[in-house]
Length: 390
Image (cartoon, rainbow, N blue to C red; front, side, top):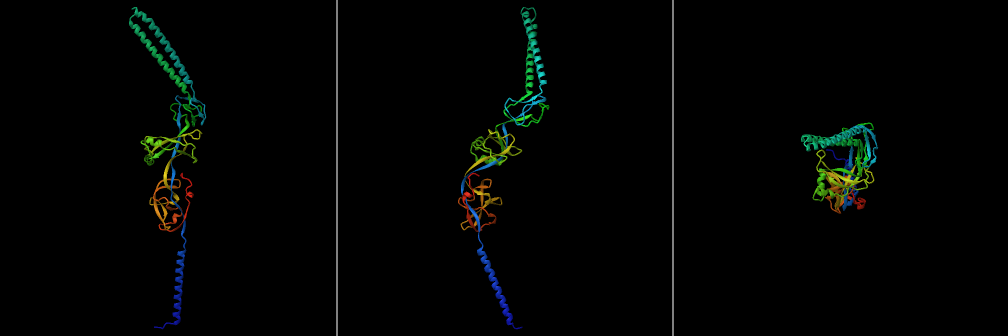
């Protein structure tokens, strides 16, 4: 075995000393970095109970309180179209004229038959008057009188029948002039002058809509209906419907109709095709803005006396649960599931899970896990909810 060289030992000790210094320096640097890492500054807000009004929205179709199809009741060529599409007409105003020459001739013929029947009745009456004294004086047998009386009754029946034919012909002639049965607006007119129309025509000549008031028809699903039935006071369904507060109508451009409506009626059964039950609300249309056939949304208000409002952006979902991060006394956070009673737009109304005054992380929750310590920045309550109506 060779003896150790002093120079080699000295070099080895120097290398070991250098490595020790480097390790200690890295350890101290890592410790200082860990100690100096800043806490996350995240906004938090205090949960407060508020009174709020939420809304349920349902698609709706609008119709006039009276929607009347105008159909011809006699056959013929359309001679005149007196009104234009979209015009407002009064009850009794002339709308269409069907060529009535045939019906005038039928009326004239019926009147002639009536005149003939009346003449025959007069002759029968004269015969009865002539035979009666002869029978009384035993000049002829009473059979003659009975025959004369029978002829008179037959002539009277013919007069009645002829009068009915005159009445029928008069009605048919009147049907050739089609008048408005109600006040309203004229809809589309799919026919032109000269078109052959009649009782077998599939399309109506037009549709009249009475729109001083309009009905908005909308539907409850089975879930909506059961929830409404359970949450609304009243001994019967009619009582519950009457207790529904005035509703709003949101038009297709997302503007709100200026007049509120009232839910009046609910249909008697659920549709097997849609699984829904239909309701209707009546709206005043004094400004003439609404028309049959337009669509919108019915908004039914629901008053909440006390609930905790939480922005939806402050929540997250996990395994079909909605959770928030609440702030603990040591500024660490914990995830807590909440029970949502209602929602509107970007706000949850919470009935269980958090308590009034408890602080909730408002934003940055995607960077948090249970136990994370943060530096909270308390937000004023009015910066989140400037109104109590959601």
